[in-house]
Image (tube, rainbow, N blue to C red; front, side):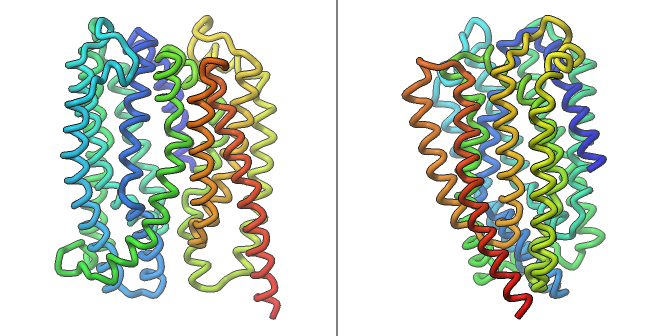
Length: 427
């Protein structure tokens, strides 16, 4: 949590650094949008990474190193094949589509050639990261999530150093350069960590074709498919805001959205930090049938989530002051109704994240899958029909509403589950 907390502060410092780096909020909004759109590919691993995590935890809990190697090998090879397919298909798509139309930005501001180069560069980097994410999965299964936090912190620091040291007079050159740097920064630390873990702690579990088995692949993919669909739906809820705002309202509003998001979602990010190692622990406790401890954990994180939700609304009067210190006076005038909408959104994000961690660790994903599917349909239909009637803040309110509805139904389901677990423990 300390490492990720430091990473958050680096992220805060990075936004004003980005403003100075691009010196154009429209191009800054474009950069945020490119990242938000292309990072969707991270969710197209058919949930294999999460499938690896759950089955690897079980194998390590049983001290079955052979099964652990089968799970790792089957998962890594499967993701490797998918990476090659997505790389070819994605690059073809980027080549044939009009990217200036897609990102709603004039060729006079950013040329189509620059957009193609930058988008392809970031896309290649994310596909590589998509494969290397399995290294992070191994650390999660080893309950060493701090290593992933170290890697994220290193990447954030390197990116901050770059945007502070380099300046370009041409926005096209600035966009090209940062795209290439981004590829290196997000992948090299993870690659080095992967080499280290398989040379040290997991030397007997190095992925190879010889240990790929039908059973392990089927298990990882079958559980992974449910994770995959949940990931896709969740990404369409959470990661499409910047694209929708850019498309319907313009990239300038995307920058405003990002400013509010970074400040108001700070506490929500803190909750994510605390919950990051919890998933594997829940899976381990479930494997050991420690239901009493699971019930206690559920109560603790519920109360913690409620406390953070209260703090979200207490933060609203301070947002303008924070923005002035963070971005400089005059960069943005905070509107209280907009800040309130983000506080509601952040609150539902916090509570839904807590519920999601429990259901993912327990492997009870079906209700989440159905709820997210309905939420995606509602979001895109409403935005498509009403974007001309309401401002860009409508996107934030829709997120808050659909996540709030998910929280209600998932809470009811988990209460029933833990009530049954209590009865099982007593009997």
